[in-house]
Structure formats: structure tokens, C-alpha cells
Length: 254
Image (cartoon, rainbow, N blue to C red; front, side, top):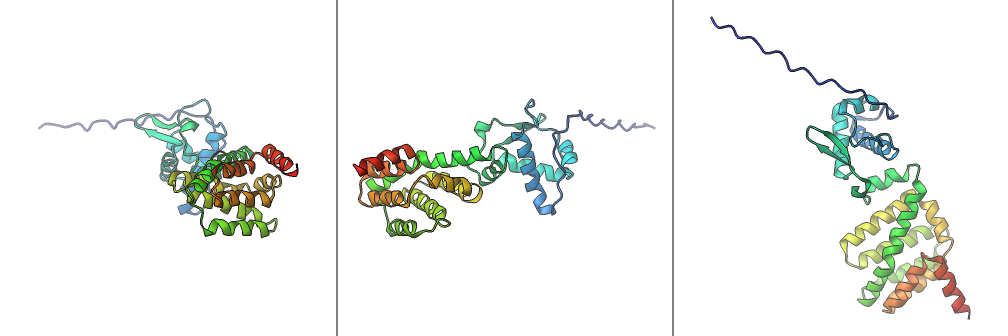
């Protein structure tokens, strides 16, 4: 009689101890756990928890620190991967991608970074996105005669807005201007930037608006409606470059 010997089980790989990254256990309803875990892992990444490593710790190590199951960690990593922050690599682990590859216009990424240590930098950069794009958009809308009744109505809304409503009126102007240009990619960029300012950086936006006047916005809208591309570009640029706005004001006085 032939006797078959059952092979020895394959030994499980020994986990290498990794230093704690300071992650706190997650305690929330199960359907929110993976989203919160993704946020916690992202904040640890930008906080430099693994600054000397190219890869995240193993899933069970992350789960232990967060106080969640490997399934939750796996879903969190899928979320981060979809935003091009990490990339699972077979037999190697989950790589942390270079920040230049991250989807910075993702609403979650903007929200997470806006609640980080460098929140003010995020607000400045979102305003700069509008400063770099809106003057050219205004010129295009004026050149192609794309202005509509809603844009004209925004002039009246901005003129009559009280200080609490002015930030929303101004952001709606920039959003509508981007929509009129007919470029869906540019509109998405403007939309996410405006959403970030409206939701997370309102105080910073208010300080920015304190260096402009409603009349400057009305002047910009009038230049667009009058089909004057160069004047429209200058007027919208002056909304962000306050030195130019002062020079323009002084020239009007003379």
C-alpha cells in the first residue's frame, strides 16, 4: 500500500516590524470607515510618516494602527489609487506616488489638503488657478460674443450684494465665466477651485476681496459684454493683481 504524506503547509511570511506612523484608530459607522481610513492614510503621507519609504506598510499593519479590518484598508487603498496617490504593485506592495502625479483637482484631495498644516498655501494656490485662467477666459468670451443674460445679471447681483453675500456672487461670476468658454476641462478646473474656496477657504477669499471693489467686477463684465477682449483680459487680471488695479485706478483719476 502506498502511503501519501501530506506536504507541510507553506509557512506564512514573517511581518517586518515597521515604526508607528502615529495613525489613530478609526471609530465610525462601517460604511464610512474606508473613506475615513483613506483620509487618515493620505494625511499621514503628506505629514511625512513614511518619508523615507517608497511603499506603504503592509495592509495588516495599517489595519492594526487604524483599528480596522484589512478589507477596510484595502478599500481605502483603492480610493487613494483612484486619485493617483498610491499604486498597488504585485508582489511589491503599495507604492506612494510622486505628488506631481496626484489628482490635485479631486474634491477629496482638495478637502484633505485644506485641513492640513499647509491649509493657507492651498487657498493661495486655488486663487492663483483662477488668476492664471480667468483673464484668458474673459478674453475668449468677449471675442466670440459668448456673454449671456445670466452674466449681465451677475453684475447687478455683485453691485447690490452685502459683504456676506459678495464672496458667493464673485465665485458664481468666475464659475459662469468658465462655463461660457465651452471648455469642459477648463470648467472642471475652475469648478473644483471655486468649490474649494467656497467650502474651505472662505475667510482667505474674503481677505482677497477686501483689496478689490464691486465696481471692478462690474467693469470686467461690461468689457466682456462690449466685446472688447483686451479690455476684458485687463479688467479680470486686475481682480487678482492688486498692483495693476491701483495703477488703473490712479490713471482713471488723472
